[in-house]
Image (tube, rainbow over all chains, first blue to last red; front, side, top):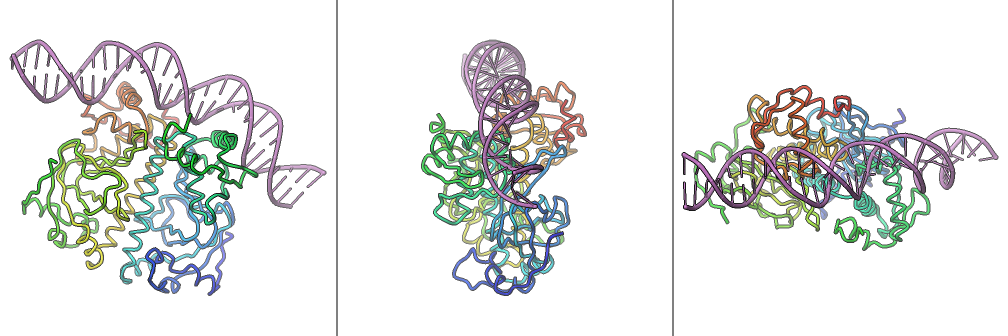
Length: 236
Length: 236
DNA sequence: CGCAAACTTGATGTTGCTCAAGCTAGGTGG
DNA sequence: CCACCTAGCTTGAGCAACATCAAGTTTGCG
């Protein structure tokens, strides 16, 4: 295991209680700092696997994770890419419902489950805040269902690029793609070849620039958004 | 509008506070009865539409709803079929993220949003209970992503039948299909023709019996479960 | 500079979609 | 009570989008 505990008060101050930061105007609580410890994971490492007992809740401090579900024969579906500030491990009963792996080098803040549960019970408004977070995740999940069930390959890729661009701070034009084509494919319900071909097509059509496979620039955001929305006559 | 207020204390006693019933051993609260009113919807009627302001939370007393998301050109994705006991309208901010329509005749219990929010703040453990409910929904959503992204038509239909069978009480063999083939198709990311053909195939293979299009019996549950799991060699 | 992993591109294949008839069931009115 | 009517379901034939199989090519790291 590459994981290691880190004790850096300054770093903690930056992220601790992020889960509470959804409602602005309140003091970031330090209930959470009291029960937290820092962890790191190298790219490709597993944080926990589907079916593992849930004895921790994690918050991402930096880096990116992928959430994975597998079928018995190895087919893979990625249900999300998580970046700084996102919580995971809030799974309902006992077992994790997906595997969490590091895409990039990741720093995490770990909370003991029991202590976390206690906070839910004892800190006023904490459960409600978590409810808001979970509701947002549910909304994202439902949008993803539309994507997976009803969008074409081009629409899927366009949606993906805009989603990732939105997650990253910046002008919303430069997009960093730390994940592989295989990850993208398994997130969109496609194959790597189709993802690659679709990106090439978007490049040829002048909607994006791809200087390297992992660095992308959006050139025509309007048309990309029309595509992503699925307006079906931008697809010609 | 077909909706009508109903005042039946007996009926209320049956369902009120169902959302609280996930944690057994507690007295069903009557906080909820105090702020509720009953509504009915005829098949096909809309309870609310995507984008509508969320000024109510609903709990299904009886019947079935479908949750719908649309693309601009009319492509439809059904994100869920909801039956008695399920909550909806907990959407995060302001607007509903899907359209809710009655599949069958539906009876609902309506809670005013403001009053509901107050309960979250004031009733100890209520927010936590809702968090559990939402986490369960999230788990279902992630399973559905695997289905939509990575399962074959046969696997999708098999999964669907088992899911519906599970939702319904009984021996788990008799399955009632109140929704149309079009609904099923839009839930599974398929066309009605493919759904129909797949059901026919399952019938021919002796896994199910289909006396009428809306009434189905599972004949070989084991094999149906293997199919649904996606073990890939049952598919031959 | 060399190597392996990741990506791209091409040729071919297959699943599920589209288009097009029929068929069935259940509701309605004579 | 039965015939009709219609919405919904089934079935068939052909097709298209995406998958699969198979080389090449790039990239980034040691």
